[in-house]
Length: 131
Image (cartoon, rainbow, N blue to C red; front, side):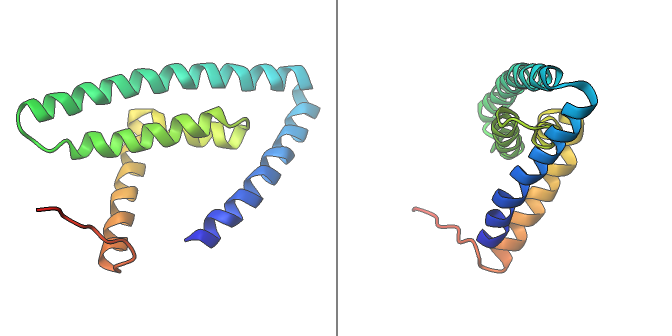
């Protein structure tokens, strides 16, 4: 798992730099900078709005004495999406918006659930309960 994260930390900046150079040649450097600032602002606004909505859903679930498991996974996706959107780059912005928009977040959230279940089944993640 850590080798994939390490590779991602090396490959992603190289890809982003390549896209910056390509986009700068197409639309100009100032347009690229403006687009990055704009996506950061829109992403932060969307992350805040989605985060508040998810928090309200979790509070509603807990009022009815239900475990807010969907809200927890939504919150994880929104947190990751918000962090990725603050990272400058077109590829990371696309990933961030996919995680923030509810329609596109659902399949990614389901994939995250499946991954966690597989990790638990393979015992690469342990769940401890306190009694």
